Length: 237
Length: 237
DNA sequence: GAGTGGTCTAGACCACTTG
DNA sequence: AAGTGGTCTAGACCACTCG
Image 1 (tube, rainbow over the protein chains, first blue to last red):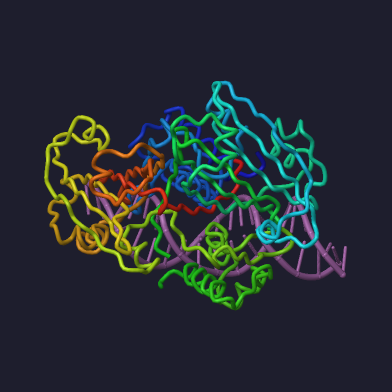
Image 2: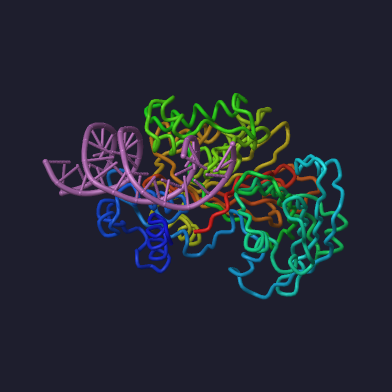
């Protein structure tokens, strides 16, 4: 950890998760934290703001910072995480079936979505199985000029890991949309779909840290297995 | 606007929304912005970080801040907004039918959820109609020790507005969960439910700025009218 | 009035990108 | 080498809470 404010953030966050700081109790004041961590108050404040943004504490002017316990039951499912990462957190056995890995000329619609000129696009279709049931259908469309090669085995493992660790690209941010729709024929074919009549569709536009759009993803979830947890602050901007 | 960093934030944000700053172009450097706004660089940075968090720009070390255009089509539906606020943004005629406003002894389950001892709880049941169709069923449970009185007409208008403006309480943050479930008999009775077999349920635990839990809400949406848009950054903490 | 968090400053050094 | 954003500092003043 080279950044002092991340050090402070991680230290306090893990103490809250471990229960060393009791929920509803108060953290030491910013001034105290600055001296115990041997840093300036602004640096402590940076760490505390991160904690507040992530739902660990609530800061109250004139009083102090109160420890919340929203993290006792939930792991973060919001934000940007790959299936592999979620599967690791949730536990239980999971498997990925790769149905398709091809390099294609994009359709006009896809070219517009991915803001392409002449580039080709990787199509990846994967089915995610958890505890014996095929639950999620992931359809990825990836700009080939950014990810030149893609093999079946990297798709089986984790595309994000490959992109971040092998290609050393940094994922920056994503625009995400969740809707509930009628299942397609493909959904019914590839997923274990008992009597559920709808399907949850998460559409993701994923950008790199340098603001290049590199991926469009549709993640189609069987509704009974879908759950989205979020933490939101009231903002008046 | 008394805060300088909010002034800078709002000024740049509105210039981006208006198109005065071209998407994909670069903002002036932090140093330049500091001099034009006659403030320090750290204050400019605070404003730019807010812009980045809200998807207006992407900051790239060594290069500059790039203007994004994610806000061209979408209004924010994520975060904490009341139906009244959304309805205002979306436009179209909307109406609220209040079905129930009662003060009750909470069930054990509700007492646990709202972390209550002896307090009574307001039950509010409302149906939201948009363009002639009854689409959303909102069930609110509000701690009476925080909101002592509640009338039918405030429920028709906006409970949040009442709480923030009349009672002068500050909404702080919420924990939110989205799932897709089988509709209840109540859903089918109160909503215009054609052949949709599932219902989207948004469960909200809403806290005040002083970290007191004051409301539990279930917002039940007809699936074809549900849409959740989010902007997420990849975080490695 | 003492203690708390919120804002702001002026300057320093660093890591990174680009010519 | 020059310019950019990222981190950090020491100190200032303010607004708020509480005894």
